[in-house]
Length: 398
Image 1 (cartoon, rainbow, N blue to C red):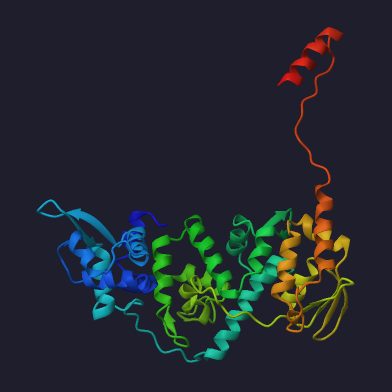
Image 2 (cartoon, rainbow, N blue to C red; image 1 turned 120 degrees about the vertical axis):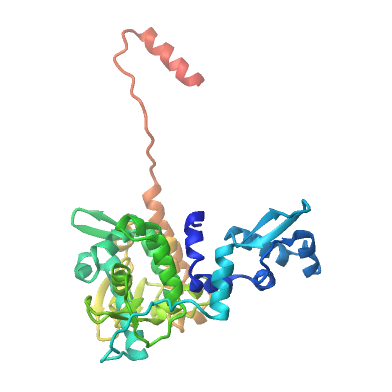
């Protein structure tokens, strides 16, 4: 929910208007298209004739959606009746986006073509590597600190995904829950936190949002001039949303993560990678992977016994689980991780995780809540036994 002044400035960018239009429901899009070229307000009573049932859920949801982003507003007509009109900036921006005109979103920069253009395959590999560096920093601590900028590290800290003790940091319950998401949802969540804090690092929210909307219409594998977005591009480069050969390069390449970013927030069926974890009833865990991040995630709650080239053997113990619980990771989160990353062979079993493992993890978690503490007050050194009895009787009657 942006302030009204921020939305007013955002709607001056045609790419932003088109991106918002695409996110609307079909009914809301119909309303917008019918009002787009009407300069004067349209009678609200006549608006209801466009639908079969004005009280239909789809219609009510559409009007609510349009009001929530201030795309239309109710005004008084000359005859005193209510009318509706589109936001003037949005009308102008969407008209420009659909009918053409205006300047290119990256300006009129006349730069020489990139002499070493990057392929789509390279950009996909680069974005995956950079994003995994961020996740490894969350899991493995300072061993990955040289790969993450201080601004990104502080954002993780302020968002509650890691906590810091001295020079060391550890992942939190929120951070572990974040790791359970698929990659598109992780990027969506991270960017929401980033935009919420961008003012604290000297960036303008409107400019950042407009740039993200513009990236969603860019072409994968095509280089674009950086222009005045240097600092923001550097942060996007850190997490793999754009590629820049070096920080002084005038070109950048949007990656697939940046182009698909806006659709990721509403895509609930994002494809997940194949599971790799097998858990036995004796609490042995086998991870069929060579990925450093996956191995580090398993090590958060299991002791590593043997490691081979593409295979890791571990053991879930009371001590390893208690260590995870101390870092704020719950038994349910561990079980969710095991189930969401279960090997295809394990998925054939119902339930996927054996009840003995599930029950024991919850029992180990319950050990931490055997005793509970509450604040209390000690009254002592009474002058006489009678004084003590007066206070004792008063406390009992409260």
